[in-house]
Length: 261
Image (cartoon, rainbow, N blue to C red):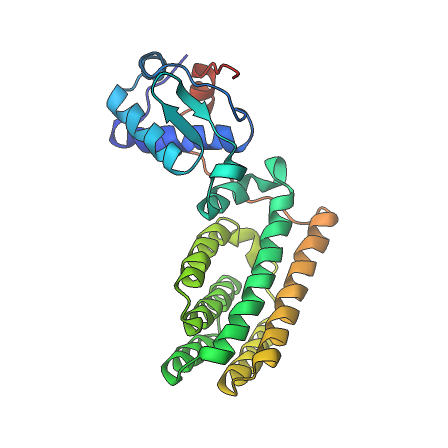
């Protein structure tokens, strides 16, 4: 039996539930959602809230809304953007097992090129910001704090590049990685190794040694990726918790009888 969603966040809840159903492959590309009037009735929501939710899903590249054709599920690998990574990572162990590997690969490539550009372009004030980020790791910090500090160190490095797109990308990656933080915190490199890495990379940036900076970042991020992948292969890496809103995801799933193209 259907239960109504919370009135104060109707559109958001519809988005969350439909997004997960699409990203997990429950509704495949080309599938057609029921007509707006019928769907709103099934879900027990007003059409304005449903329309708002569908527009948000369209903005994410998950559905396409066309007059006369209704709402169809899109192939998000062709129409979606990097912001979907933050929603896909919690689903990775069961629905997208290669995504963790792909994320680590991207982080290594991205971090290496960020270090290279930072060494080439960093100004005195940029280097000062990186130094402050590195000094945060020198104190007595917990594993979770060290994980955050290490990531913020690379955020500071990215600012050194002066590249706005890189800045926006690392913001998105940071949001995505946060969904995996409880797991990754367990894998944090020993504190002294993190500190040594920060000192070495900071020295390379200060010296504007482009190739050394790139090598230091690549080696460090590569070791981290290998550790995570090794634990995954041996079944020692636990999956992150998938958010639950407690309002009956299966209810919306049962309300949606999709039609194939």
